[in-house]
Length: 156
Image (cartoon, rainbow, N blue to C red):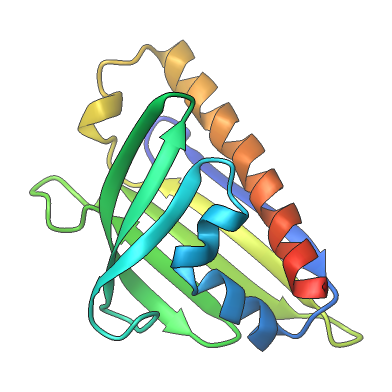
């Protein structure tokens, strides 16, 4: 269930096979190369990229930097890669990030990125509805930039 209308999906068509695209999105330490907010990640347990593995995601917005523990919840090569943030918190997980790959005609891939706030994180609870809407707008813009950058990497 999404809170505060904080759910967004964006899709890009990529001239690369689903397995190629999957290889990029499951390499979370590289996500900082493509995302305007993410600064990369460090695997902390399990087999990198496998379901149940964990990582610390590093983020930044302007001067503000923070890290968040994440757990991979779905790892289906060429089809879907997903993780949740702060799954061990009593009120978490808070946010689910999903990347779905669908083969299209001609050997390419439709890559869909999904941002779903499952439970409003404590850091956002004091924000007004206008501030939450602004945050959602920032995430949407970041997703568009991220998908464009993943497309460029996959097609190079």
